[in-house]
Image (cartoon, rainbow, N blue to C red; front, side):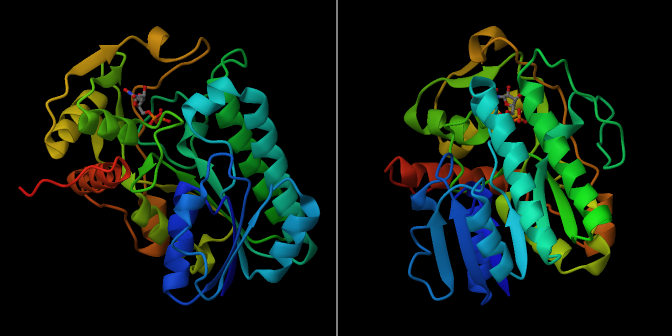
Length: 328
Ligand code: UDP
């Protein structure tokens, strides 16, 4: 299979590319390196069947050329990460909405199949956990920039479903919950790589708010597996799927687990939200997926244990920081 990945130099994209090449598929990547990095695909460059282009997914002729050559397009290019979103709302909205439009319009010419990556952010601040794909979304006011991300991705979903029903484009929408693993950068605010770096450097581990807010962390390998199973399942096309795990952990407990895993003696420091984020930010207390649709349709339930996930991230950060693993 020939697979075109927008945002292929990013965290999830590079893992997907690696997996596809490993099973003998051909992979074409387009990435503008805004949040992705060449180092994520350095080990793939030169491998048979691998091709990459540095450019933007807003470039309609270029996107169209790749979509035409591909049996499947996976649209991962987006502005992601809470810090980036709050600091660059114009970039976030424009990138997320326009690029998806460009990809879907290209796919519509010959009804090419597309996976559109979405996010658990679309559930907004809904408190009715676990989140089910068909439940109402609950976003905050437009004066709070965080919700611009959720809204832009929700619009992507509407657009994808509209292309599916009106223009007969086969689409699958994946709502990724907190997805973590090796190669994820902490630069855009993601909690786990940040905690791991802080622990390994012996710096205070910064837990925002009172640390009682929780998340469910899924391993990127599971996210990739879920995506591949979805595209291989005819019944999945035309639908939206939560992709994530259901094991909840508070940020305070996560900080402790990271500290223990890293063998660190870092202090765990509570940082008030108004010091952690610019104005216009609201955190949510819980975010838990209902993954029964994914399991029912594909037979797959992501469940790499949290301890394993944290070990993988700590070891990755240790390598990036040039630190040596101390044998237990
Ligand atoms: N968080 C934290 N310390 C950090 C970065 C994030 O306590 O250094 C918290 C953040 O406030 C949120 C949780 O960790 O409650 C997850 O944050 P992340 O940005 O990784 O994902 P999201 O908020 O999108 O779920």
